Image 1 (spheres, each protein chain N blue to C red):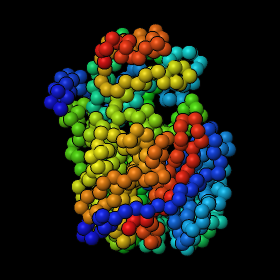
Image 2: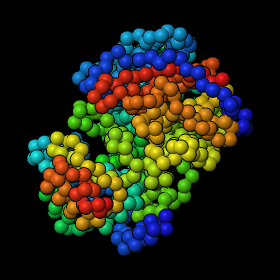
Image 3: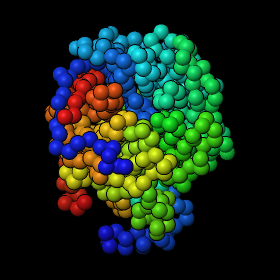
Image 4: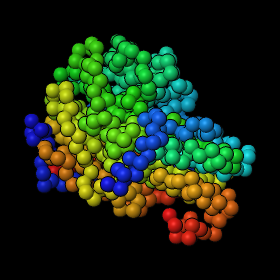
Length: 391
Length: 163
């Protein structure tokens, strides 16, 4: 099954000319491509949408820029928020429509675009919203205050009208959290099942957990995405610390029924976080953990990992690391048995810092990629975009 | 790896809790609060970049930060900041950029925890030191920072080649 769901080996990437997405830039303007599940770019019909947060207006606000896929410039961005806004995400609904979600004034909100009316997804303190659309249904997840800690809530949204109504919202676990839960990621599989992953601290170290729901019903008991036992690491075995860290899980629907996950993992505590992945081919059980980056990246910390897949079985992971002296954007393609050699994205590598990749695959299998580009610490940060083809 | 195992094994005497946070009894505050306090007091900042569940952080807390004289030295002379390497909590850098605590690790190019960072009262980095350190190490670093030696020497030069 996994062998079938793969891109062909011995192929090469071709890239479009890179474009700058944000029109307002300066040394004191700081755009951020950070969001739960790292979903800052989407392609719907022939439209590309990018969302981010920056402080050009004197406070953190969320912005959206779009362009027709064939256009060589993005249209001037529009502001999504009225109050302090963080960590926006965007997903495609098809036929040129999108849904966006973000945190604003301490609560998560969502909006159908273009032209929709934003709504609050939660009535209590909440953050780190993410969205997934599949099998005709739109889902949201976020981290919501529940007593002393936050817990993960998943909602199914009505996206047919201009205002996304909430059809149901429920915590993944009914009981109060015993420690922090954060940074959810969602995937909707071809059969309509929903997979949610998140960072969880119930074991007194940070572990990505995962759960599934098949029919808008209850979620299965959470399971660890990481396959380390007893917290992992030498220290935990000796009673020092509770275990190794693993953070910022991302998910993608993959193939007809599958789900792929990637996250940052500190199990090798001497070389910073590495990118690890796990695959669920449709059984609703993730397999063994797979190290993504190749040996050239082994002794280097990886950051900002993102997994991207599609229904035809394409699958790749992206991240940034500084193995060549400065941070560059790297990707690795799943070949059916392993992640292949790391590939530096040409426009996202070289002098300066190229970081924080976010990406999606369109219906034709082309990769749409955005990242932050900063020439030096004093220069303006640009959001850059390229489209990549694999042939 | 055997040496690491042996060193960790020797620390079993100090086992009390099995996860790591700031050492108990120290007045650690958030990054923003510490920077604000440092600007007002003129004291340098001692930033402890730790990770929830980190074994070496736990070892350092029990073996080193349990020393009462070190606690007094650092509590009296530094604004103490604790940053969680995996947290989404927000902070504002001296440049005005708002990032998360986890993102601070990216900017510091942190590859291991604990990571100890000394900053001027204005938030400019003086030196960063990774890994387990002894009470004497922290006394040496204090002399390097508060004595102003960092303006003329690297830490290794100051320590005479000792790490």
